[in-house]
Image 1 (cartoon, rainbow, N blue to C red):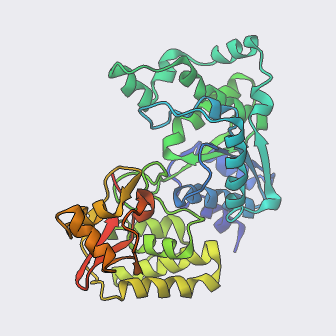
Image 2 (image 1 turned 60 degrees about the vertical axis):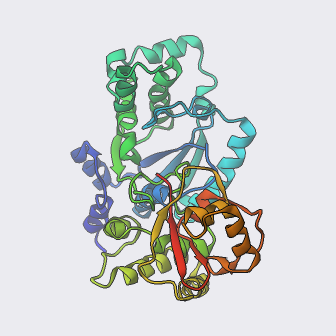
Image 3 (image 1 turned 45 degrees about the vertical axis):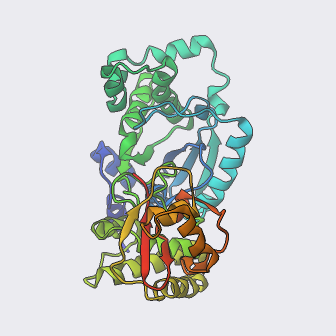
Amino acid sequence: MGMVSAIDRIYVNAVDVVPREELEHRLKSGLSLRVKLGIDPTASDIHLGFVVVLKKLRGFQELGHTAVLVIGDYTARVGDPSGRSKTRPVLSPQQIEENTRTYLEQAYLVLDRNRTEVRFNSEWLAPLTFADIIELTRASTVARILERDDFSKRYAAGEPITLTELLYPLMQAYDSLSVEADVELGGTDQLYNLLMGRHIMEYYGKSPQCVLTTPLLVGTDGKMKMSKSLGNYIGVTDPPNDMFGKAMSIPDELMPSYYSLLLDHPMSEVEPVEQKRKLARSLVRSFHGQKAVAPAEKHFNTVVGHGVPEDVTELQLPPKDSIWIVNLIKLAGFAKTNGEARRFVRGGAVRLDGKVISNERLSLPTAELAGKVLQVGKRRYIRFIAPH
């Protein structure tokens, strides 16, 4: 593959490239670039939505550039307000450390460890004096900060915005200055923060970073961006059977975007079910290895092959953390009373993904039910989809 086509691959699935001519120039200069990606350690697991930007970072590594992962251990004490209507909870240092460890292990399933530099932003943010922070705040105006979509909406709605949150984009920008980023990557919801990095670098007399954003992957519910908190995600450490089953539950209209963002080949003109099988096999292969593919597919076939019809009815789960098996049976419309539902369980008539459920006190985490099939008796099936 020639150098030009390798560089062109960087632009595949890119949404914003700012400024494109400058990035082009840097890519063709032959210099090793420092490509920054900020990681928020508020969750311990990576889902496929984050894999989209990690794959882009891997593309830069394959051209000989260095990935600089900035772990926001200091900014996690503030909470990123991007795209959120509420402020995030603040984590303890122990939680942040534990999340970071598992996050990195998972990131290395996509990235080249040898071309990755890991930095914690407490390294440069913690020593800042109050005078340093005052200097940093001079670099931006209140009007510019309030241009941010989520801030402007909250401000217009009269919802409180703390000064702490207003400082968040400046802190993220200061990270770029501190690691001397040449390029910064992020999802489209991060564009404002990434551009602030350019602005702050210029303010401090440094060569400003180029910015490249990648699309947000819509979750398995087909509505919202993939997110742990919404339960509409496929995690890279999901067991093979779950990964396969969740992939098979992705709505048909999302398939082209999953193919283009997660697989390196276009979608073939085959039946939607076969397209999903190809995607499911590919995901299991990527994160669990070839040997896990056949057993995961076999498990799915056994579950679905219990006579589960292809066009099984789908039911949206309620936005609760967990749900009692008896309530689940009633929700599916398979029993009218608790007593009737309990009798089904006691009689061995209830299966979830082909496994008999015999404990009538069982409570199931809602997030784990997405994509699974509930069967009551011989003929009644329902597949659950993630809550809104």
